[in-house]
Image 1 (cartoon, rainbow, N blue to C red):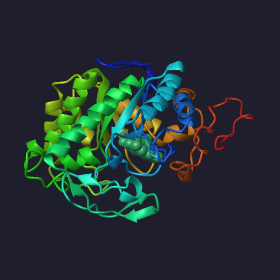
Image 2: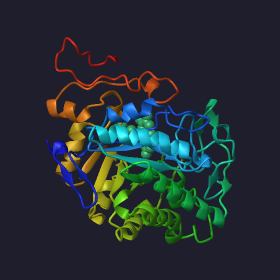
Image 3: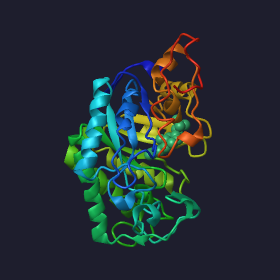
Image 4: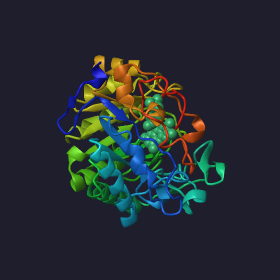
Length: 364
Ligand SMILES: Cc1cc2nc3c(=O)[nH]c(=O)nc-3n(C[C@H](O)[C@H](O)[C@H](O)COP(=O)(O)O)c2cc1C
């Protein structure tokens, strides 16, 4: 099975090609943003993944997009993350921190502040806040100097991440959050050096990459993108041009990897893979979780070097072993995906080949 083969990239070497996709689980202390003590065990249980990408971690309180999301701003955050990285390393794993600013997909009910964005364009639909599903609010457009502050916040969080033992950082440029809000024409209506033309819309994401690379080195930096993904009310009419130019600019760095979320509608991998000679991690977004068969096809076709699996890792902490043994896969109820509850987090058992001891859908 190709997924189980080792991967040797320029910057990252992995024992298999199975990554754990970043997944918010909402278990952190909602007041402080400090990860829950059980978070170390949760990730350590999943250390047989070739690479773990952590849940999105806010780089500034204003960019926190929902209850119970952890941060990486204070010494207390860093100390709690150190427990996580040490636990993963002890089990032989590797873990990148996903650095996240939600931009307009934040809510005063969660952050206590008016959300910020490239432009004052309110997101259609509702978002998840402390009070449950809530109407979005109109964000405030960041001033030019404030954009620079956010760039510095990304760089500061990257430094803290590496100091806390993370093997690198993945910048969250996907799913309609702040970085993608600068890239997309419907959310970026600026007419300064951060908007107005495709080149200007690329400026903020490229400044973030440059600042983070300067701080921790390109080999520890990755970027996640979801070209054409309409999530969180994004419209990318000229997405092909935007992302092709973005990759042309990024090729100057030997980044750890580029992480591309693809869907049957966007077909991003087919036009981006030829433009990206470096390591490419792919993830598929659809109703059903990315499957082993889809992963094999992505590797076999050369569209990806590594495949990220999200939902399957929630209930199958030992996913590579299950793939290897063709073992049954457990399913997690959607109810346990997010929230302060502690069941449905570290209590999914590893596969036991003795059928008498193992019930596929049960938690211990
Ligand atoms: C519970 C949950 C939380 C998620 N949180 C994040 C996140 O913090 N950052 C991110 O980039 N994607 C996040 N995603 C998206 C996943 O990384 C992935 O793209 C998606 O689940 C599709 O992959 P899958 O089919 O293998 O599950 C999340 C998905 C789920 C199910």
